[in-house]
Length: 271
DNA sequence: ACTGGCTCCTGAGGGC
DNA sequence: TGCCCTCAGGAGCCAG
Image (cartoon, rainbow, N blue to C red; front, side, top):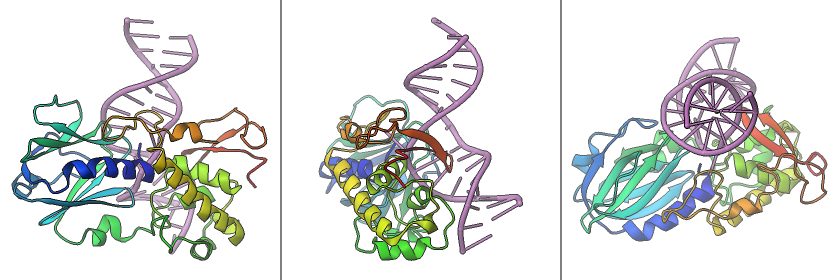
């Protein structure tokens, strides 16, 4: 489900509802996520105040007094805040009850996501330490991409989706960014010119920023913390548009598979 | 060091 | 209506 814009949309919705609240109780209904949820959580968290909700890559970082809860939404994860006593839904795996009665619920039908507790610097955690720069950071630029890509034989799309290269870009936005940059996603990364990589840096930032402004993209089941869908779907130019005309030249959008992921392109606009 | 393929899991949608 | 198949927005792990 979520790429960077959806995670950021979730963060913005959740943060004002839970920041500065004190945990009263934690309930783990199902600990078997991507990694087992720590059974220490119900003992450790109560009494701690939630100081901040930030984001690194696709991880939401809930900064408590004595540590950080690192939440990844996987493919189908949702967070929502409800009053106490609100009906528990199927797949509500973790519930954090605050002393004011509100409840933060982690729901994830496929359980590809994770809820990880760490008392160390989360940025040094093994899940985060090896990740590349944020797409919005100055480190993500054409010089960096050019240097990193010279030895890479993988498709430029797989390269762009590699979290060690740059974080937050999943399948939808990789397709969209490559279309806007006029780059064929199947091209090997090492063959893409610095000029084209420069276009890719800008189109990536642009697509992500526009998607955040629209509240993310809802294809199947993404909704924000209030249950609202994202409105970027109507802005998608290639993703999910196989057989439909290119918005630029009218050529029919082609569908193929790269690295086991659905890929869409206009063969005329993307070289 | 890279690469492609497989894997975890549930649910939706299409064809018959 | 139901059954079976394919596909899905992530990403770690493994063998080659």
